[in-house]
Length: 212
Image 1 (spheres, rainbow, N blue to C red):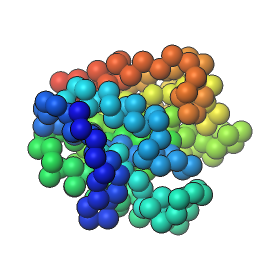
Image 2: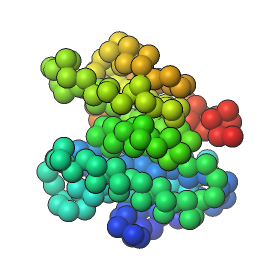
Image 3: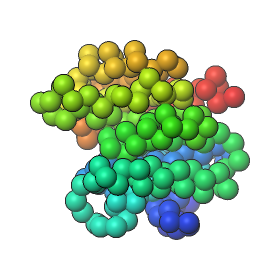
């Protein structure tokens, strides 16, 4: 596996090249308070790369503009456009199926982009989807779920304050295409606690029936 800095057409991040590439690729991005070097993203990227995928971990435009601080809702469309550019960049390196994923805010923007354009990816990997702000379950972030036409793999901790497993299960009924949910017992929003085994999530994400 080779990991190197990546910068092209406004996309900035790090690229993982497998020893034996199988033509498939994965774009990964970060949450509101992090960047592409987040340990969780590195862990997922290394696991996917070991399975033959070329993986691009990218910083969203808001993070490229400043090193810290949360994103602005007014600039969310620009963050989605940055993800689109990252997918286009990876397609020049991986000619097979492209998967798109992200943690928290990054996953939300990835899913919103897929709702706008179903051709953007073969499937989504959504880590700790921020279903609602903590202690505000009435403010659901699911309006675009009914427009999703891309299969999605959700990975969610049982102690995530941004949504319970039961709330997420109800929300997934809004999505008409296939969804799968991997729960991480004892984990919070950062997925650092609990037993997080990436194998089931990646096996489901890369299943042949999603990749043809």
